[in-house]
Length: 504
Image 1 (cartoon, helix red, strand yellow):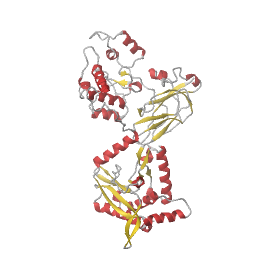
Image 2: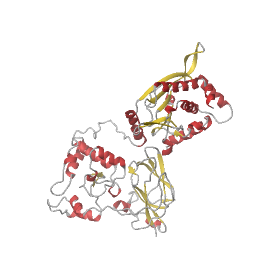
Image 3: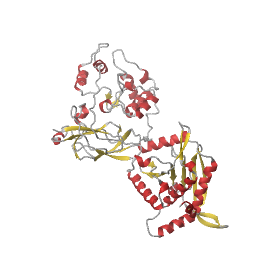
Image 4: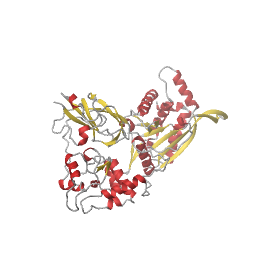
C-alpha cells in the first residue's frame, strides 16, 4: 500500500532560516526519483536546487513561485510504494495541493520511510515524527466565526458554522491575506526567527494573528501585512481595538485599515505607490547584501588610503608567464598572490573584531573573498586557503567560482568565511573607489583600471600602465602606519614583481 510522505524545506546551512521559491522543477502528478531536484530556491546566500529524498508520485506542492517559505515548512508530498500511481490527485491539475490544502494530514497515522540520507547541509532524511495538528478550542472557534448570531449568545450563524465544522473555511484568512484572530493559548506557530524579531521590533503580538502558511504557520508576509494595516491608521487602530462584546475580534479594525491601505485614502506613505514609481523588494541576495553593507557602516570605523602604482612591469611579467607553456595566469590571480604575501607581513589586516569579547582575532589562514557582479547582484565568493595556492591554482579557482557565481550555483559555504576581500572594480572602467569593508572582515583592497598615463620613469617622462590601489580598513585593528605599510608593499610588488621572490 502506498504511503504519502511529506518533504519539508530542509536546513540549507549557514544559519539560513528561509528561502524563496524561484522555480518548480516538477508538477503535481509527476513521478520523481530519489534525490531528484524538485525545486529551485534562492536564499540570502545562493541559488540552490533542492533534491527530494523520496521516490514516487508528487501529490501536492506548497507555495507558488516567488513565495518565501521558512525552513521546516512543507514543500511537497510524495506517494511512495506499491499503488503510488493511484495517488495522482483527482483535483484540478492546475491546483497544487489538492486535498492536502483542504486541511488533510498527508500520511497521518502511517509510518514514514527511512529516506535517502543526508542530501543537504545540516539535513537528514531519517524517519520524521508525525505532525501534530493544532486543535482550536471549541469556544474560541465559535467566537471567531460568529457574525450572524446575537450579541453575547456565543453561537454562530449556520453558514459560518458549517464552514468551520467541515474544514472548508480557515479562520483568519480572507482572499489569501491574514487578519487578526483571537489570542490563543499554547506555542505560537512560527518557525522563522526573523519573523519573531520583526514582530518583536514592531510591538506586534503574534498570538493575535492567524498565519496563512500550512497549518496556520505565521509567515513574514502575514506580519508585514498586519503592520501595513496598523500603519494605515497611524499605527494605533489595529493594535488598540479590543474584542467586541459579541465575541468577535479586531476584524472590523483590520478590514477598515486594509481597505485604506489598498486605496491610499488613509494617507499612508508606505502602501501607496505613485504612478510610474516601482518598488523592488530587498530580498534574497540583494537583501542580504543591503543588510551586510548597512551593518558594516554602523559597526566598523573604517578609513581609506590609496596610492597610484606603475603596473607596467606586472603586465610584462604576466605576458611572459602566459607566453610559456602551461595554463594562462589571470591578472586577478597575480593580485591575489600579492595580497597573501602582504598579509603575511601585515597580519593585523587579516583579522576580525569580536565585539562581545572586545578582542581582535587574527587568522592564521587567508580565505580570500573577491567581489563578483552577477545578474542577481553583487556576491563575494571565497577562495579557501589562498595563501597556500600558487598563481596557477588561484587562476583555476577564481575561474571556477566566477562561473558558479554567474550561474547561481554557489553554495553557502563558498560565500562565507572570508578573512580579506579583493575588489577589482577596474573591470567597470573606473580608477578609484572607497569600498565598504565586507563585514566582519577588517580590510578590503580595491584595484582600479590599468590604463596608459604619463609617468616619471627613471627620471624621464614616459607613458606607463598606471593603476590606483585603495585600502579600506577597520581602524580598530590597526593604525594608519600599518595600513600604509601594507598598501605600500602591495604597490611595490605591482611595480617590481621580483619583490615577490622573497616570499616564494
